[in-house]
Length: 329
Ligand SMILES: [Zn+2]
Ligand SMILES: [Zn+2]
Image (cartoon, rainbow, N blue to C red; front, side, top):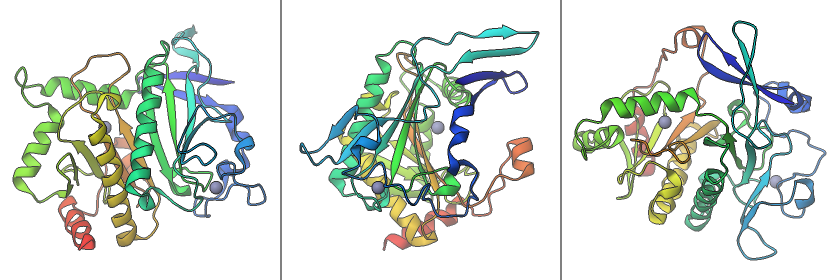
């Protein structure tokens, strides 16, 4: 039984998922290669489809899927209904962790990560993300969906076969609320550029932190990068919800992600990373622009970072940009 508990110190929800700890892979040393149970056939490889619950969605010609979405066997969020907090004593508050937890298999190939996808395959993955977000938005108890890709054990992956996850949750998480309120606070003039479009205009003018500009989608090393080689993917055309983005923008996002991930690999080796897709809460009209954070796991957050939230970044984003540009030439 997975439960949400409220942390009154940080005013954020925590998910306590006791059943997931029964997975033997959860406490293995992080530097081991990802291969949860080497003797068990990969549940995400073609031919092993019966190892997962039936697919919610699959893409590609019948009998040879290219992208597949399946329910997570160990869901952190499950069941329907809105957030129903229960007070226990003066400060303790909990709620059932209702919601959706899905796995997005990026390709039928066991060793093909996002950095290796073809244009067409990267486009299919983005189309699948859009379709699932649309579906989650139609479920009334689901307030927000976090789409992620964890690559490598240090980034939290426990199955080697490249996959992402979609977690539809019954509340809007603190990280998102912070971004939303900063967007709202920025909104300068009615109809003027929003926060990220203002950043984009300035970065395009300066030119020194642009890693890729394909005309639709721009990848920058943010001026405020808190960790080495972190990247931010921003559409030129601001749209609050990723599932409302133009198909061409989504296809371009898939391609530029492939390009920057393969450059990161060429520069740093096959390092672990997290992709974090941020989109406005379902059914909420908000001043926001969907975007993607690329967060390479180059270091772990130590005590100072954990205690203060203040990151110490040893690679200035201008240098990261230069290196990532050179590697493409
Ligand atoms: Zn596999
Ligand atoms: Zn964000």
